[in-house]
Image (cartoon, rainbow, N blue to C red):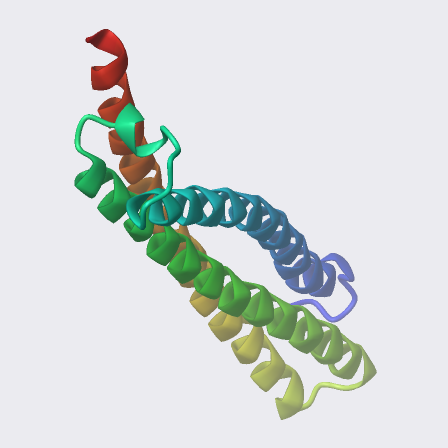
Length: 157
């Protein structure tokens, strides 16, 4: 690495920082989805406990609909937890990149090498967490599609 090239340290700082912000935006979307899933589940539970609403009747299989609604909540919680860890790891990578670039520009020490290793390690863990969260979002979306499919069968009758 060329110590006079300031773009190398900036990439170690900017990359994780941008990805951390992207994960925070994903957390916001997941929080909204979680809130909507909780409301649906609560309404279903209230009707199953003797409520007079028509929500459960809008599904061809009300028991399966409640199971799917509950599954959505669990999946969204898993994805939110993965995103929390991911944001933290990208944050660690950003701080280590900043510290490492300062140390590296100051003098060539072993600390800069460790900072680079920490950035790469934290960013790798964060990227893995991000990919895992995306996989969980796909499963949650499929679960939502099944819920919609259960409603579509009732509407077709």
